[in-house]
Image (cartoon, rainbow, N blue to C red; front, top):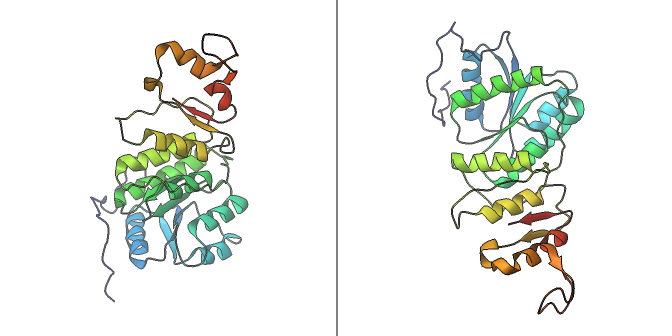
Amino acid sequence: MREPPRPYRVQSVPAPGTRSALTMSRSETVWIVDDDRSIRWVLEKALQQEGMTTVSFDSADSVIGRLGRQQPDVIISDIRMPGASGLDLLAQIRELHPRLPVIIMTAHSDLDSAVASYQGGAFEYLPKPFDVDEAVSLVKRANQHAQEQQGLELPANQARTPEIIGEAPAMQEVFRAIGRLSHSNITVLINGESGTGKELVAHALHRHSPRAASPFIALNMAAIPKDLMESELFGHEKGAFTGAAAQRRGRFEQADGGTLFL
C-alpha cells in the first residue's frame, strides 16, 4: 500500500537512538485525533521516531468512547471533524481527566477557534499548516507541563467573535495573547501602528472576558482638547465650569464593570 503524501514540511528528525533535550524519559502515549488520514500518518511517524507510542482516531466520538477505559499522556486533536468536534472532545476530557493536556489543531485560523480552545482548557492551539518539528516539541512540552502543574484546570467558556482572522505567525501570537489575557483583570497595553486593528483586539479581549455583559467604552484621547480631558474621563457636575449645563458621567464611570479603551 502506498503511503499517503506528506502535506506539511518536515524538517530534520533525530536519527533513531538519539534524543533531544526535551525527549521524554519513558515511552509516552499520544492520541492523535483527525479525520484527515495524511495528518495522522505524518504525526504518527514523527512522534514514533521520538520514542513515543501513538494511537490514532478518525473521529472525536471514538475517543470519547475510549476515555472511560484508558488515558493517554497527551491528546492532539483537530477542531472540526464530522460528528463531535474537537471542542466537544475537549469538554469531555475536562470532565473525565482535567489534568490531561490537549493540543487543538485546525486549518481554520481565526480568533473564534483560538480563544474557544484556550477557554475550553486546551494546553495550546496549533494552526495548520504546521511544522512537524514544532508539533513534536509542543507534545513534549505538554507532557512536561502536566507533570509540573498537577491539578491545573482552566475555565470552559466558549465565546464567539469572528471579526479577526489570520494565518500569519504574528496573528497566531495575537490570538494566543487574547486567549490568555481575556480572564485577567490587569491593564493591557496594545501596541501597533494606526490602522492595524488595536481596537478590534480590545473588543475581542472584552467580549471574551467576564466583563462581556458590561459596557465597552472607546475613547480617542488624541481628539480631546487638553482642557476637557479631565472632564471627559471623570465627568462633571452641573455648573462646575462655564458651559456645564448638566451633570455628565465620565468615561470611567460609564465603563464601570466593563472595559475602557483609551
